Length: 115
Image (cartoon, rainbow, N blue to C red; front, side):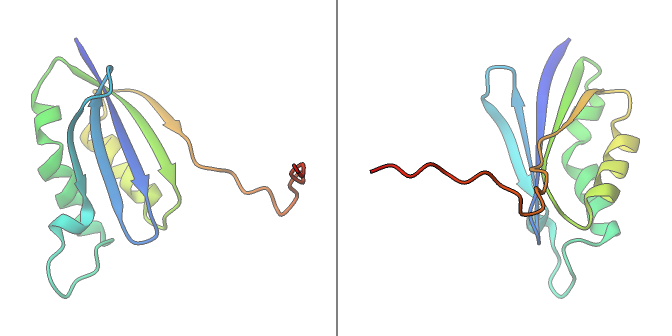
């Protein structure tokens, strides 16, 4: 059984995928902007489905691969992207970790001044 990490970074206008092994060496990275057709928005549901199906077919076809998902960032399509990803790679996913920064509502500790 081979264990890989799939890092997904959600930006305001783009989504990045990076597949790494346990040691940290990168096998491939893709962005949803690479598959964009001219004149259409990047973050449409049909574009997201095509992006997932085209780029993660290698992972699904190999029966020995298991994946840890690491999500980071905020985006309006984050929920739909994760739903599509879970339906496509449902049995391959071992864990899901969301590393997004939580909002602190403006209540932050002040930094100590150093001279």
